[in-house]
Amino acid sequence: MQLKELLTEDRAVSPVIGVILMVAITVILAAVIGTFVLGLGDQVSENAPQSSLSFDYNTTGPTVDVTHEGGETLEGSNLELVGSDSGSINDSASGDFSAGDQIYTGESYTAGETLRVVWTNPSGGSTNTIARSTAPQ
Image 1 (spheres, one colour):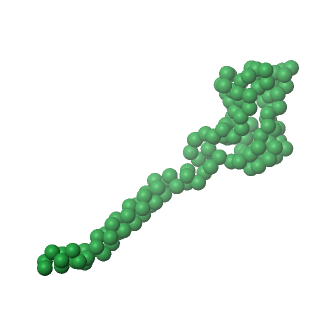
Image 2 (image 1 turned 135 degrees about the vertical axis):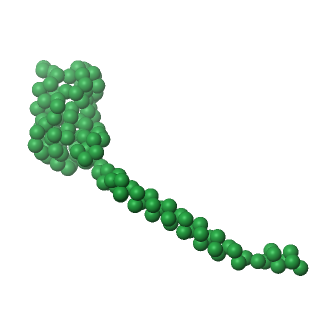
């Protein structure tokens, strides 16, 4: 008789589920609050700007110019043109870089070199490649 009563007894199920839910909610709240208190919340929402850039190669120089074709306006001081062979090609542009603007780098490149426009996050220092192109042979 006692075995039958033991198997049908379910009074302890509700408190156990309640405790598990309370612990899960506490852990989630602690993670969210900790993220914002430590200042990581601001960096999570700071994504690289979305812009379309084109590369114009002058083979007689050989030099390269970068044209902003559309998208978000970029702050020139946060941009850098980097080459795979020559390292940093220019330090930065100045002012806003918006649709229709062109950066005349006047810097040379080597044939087949990969050039990238790199954006540096002003608040966190992380970098993202905005555009990439391979120089003509």
